Length: 98
Image 1 (tube, helix red, strand yellow):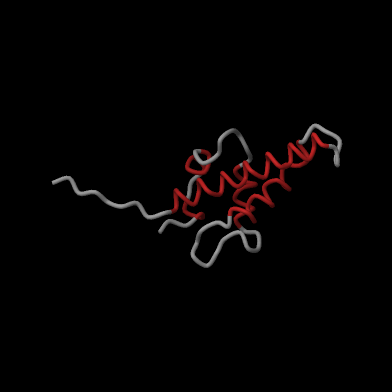
Image 2 (cartoon, one colour):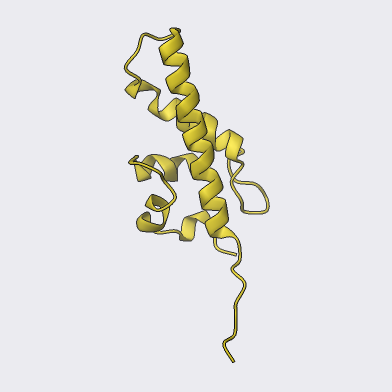
């Protein structure tokens, strides 16, 4: 199985629907609880850190409905990124062409 630390920037970027800071994603990999003993990302913990990492980019007053909605969308985005990376880490079945 591939490790998140084996992934190059392009592979990580392919897991992101949009644009984000790859260095921030790599830093999130080092946060407590993000990587399980099995080597996969816990999508919920990753999403928490991801949303926290980009909350400064939310263009709304904190504690407003618009801010909460944007933060929820960022959390879902982070969850999807983690899910996509986990799919990339899964061993690929090899198909022999005979």
